[in-house]
Image (cartoon, rainbow, N blue to C red):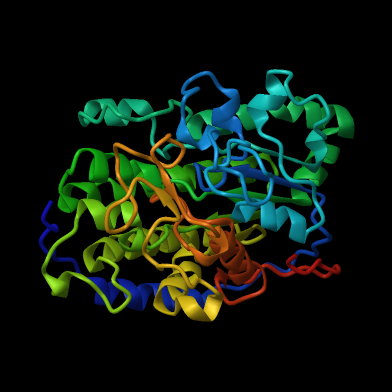
Length: 390
């Protein structure tokens, strides 16, 4: 399929506005202690098993070997060879890896300590509800567990936290000392129409305000419930995804940047992230005593593609570790997990895992970039001793 033509938007003014946002963002002066728990929302970049414990898609490839082979040695429902960003975040703050809510609710995970945190993210989920996609003729959404559903699950869990705190003030204290990881979410709202239905990027751009609106609405709900620290990840550079590189391949060299990524797709990622940051800035003004932190996944990940050798990625930076062959080892008819897959010997040498998701090694670098590096606005700061990345 030929690459989409360049489209027009005014990025210069947007960059100026985002730059001003960065200048004025400060951390509220409220005293913070060590985080006692983490609650996570999102899609497959954060799902630690919710889709696995639901009955909606029991044949999903993420449930099959070689998923999970690097760290867990077996599939866990994570769409990677090992740990995700949220796993590294939990380890960093000395919190057990987050159990999936549906595993707890269904009685499959009886040893879960919900006071230490729960994961509500679901692979394939969207920020917008299924009715939006039905209205727009998009019928290939793999799960109905949108952000709205995940927030409802969180509210279902609150009585369990209430029982442990005995008072509403105690519940507020639990949420006040918790780290909320709100995303990444929204990527699938664009992925479904872009790479499964080839809708134009001009049409997809019209979805951005609604996607960002759903994210900010969810953040407001959490603040009203007592959340104090909320991390909101942005969108990855999808122009470097082996899925998109395969679907939108072209002989026009001007469509690619120096790293070999598709420029117009990365500009779209940047556009979503700019709009999200502007919305978060407005939320900070309305809620000055809440720590609303933007996690810049895009710029944490992009250097990996620009200079892969520096980060130990000696395999092809743009080629999937596990896939069905082709220039980027991605084939919709032979996905990772299928019997005809072609898997690399060492996932640590690769950024892309299966064409859509990244390897544990790449997620580790992204996590380090947001926890110890410059890729959060404002920075995640803690007065207590933090663990180093392992």
